[in-house]
Image (tube, rainbow, N blue to C red; front, side):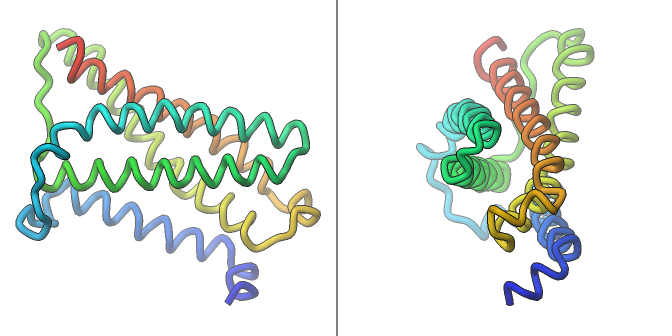
Length: 185
C-alpha cells in the first residue's frame, strides 16, 4: 500500500484533500443533519474558546517544527508537525461538530466593522484554510512515504514552507475572528 501511495502522492493527496473539503462543505451547507450527532451543550459552548487555544498552540508547534527542520533536527520536526496535524484535526472536528449542532454565530458588532474588518478577515482565513489542506496533506504524504534522507529529492521542503506559512496565518486570523465574535463584540 505504501508503495502505491509513494508512486501516486499527488493523486492520493488530491483525493484525501477533496474528501476533507467535501466534509467541511457538507457541514457548512447544512447537509449533515444536526440530529445525526448528539448535542452536549456544555461542550458546544466552550468550543470557540477551545479552538482559539488549539489555534494558538498550533501556531507555536508549527513555528517550532519549522525551526527544528532548519536546524536539521528532523526527529523533532516530525514530532512537532505531527502534533500540529493532530491539533488541526481536533480543531476541525470541534468546529464541524459545533457548526452542525449549533450553526454559525452572528456577528454582533457594528455594520462597518462587519463589512470592512470582520468579513475580509474571515474570508482570507477561510481561503487560506482551504488552500492549506491539500498542501499540508501533500507534505504529510511525502513525509510518510519517504525516508528522511530521500526527502531532499522531493518537493517536501518547498511545499512544507508554503504550507506552514499559510497554516500559521490561517490559525492567527482564526483567533482574530474568535476575538471579534466572542470577546470584542
